[in-house]
Length: 70
Image 1: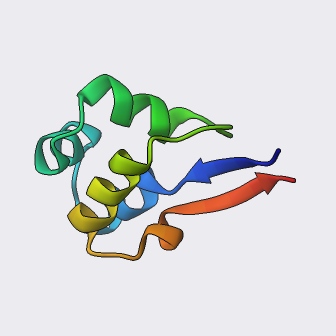
Image 2 (image 1 turned 45 degrees about the horizontal axis):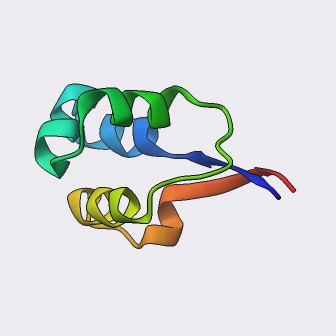
């Protein structure tokens, strides 16, 4: 199973948003967004959260993550 890194900090930075603002705009708990943003590699991610983040950043879901380990 591979690990993925979510590009939350990159997208937030492009928009001038803090992680707290991403949380408020997406409706995802701050601690969850913070954990996703700080993690160098995740094995599992909640699909509903990915959908909300993609909508918040106005990007495709697959643009939100990159594979960091196969």
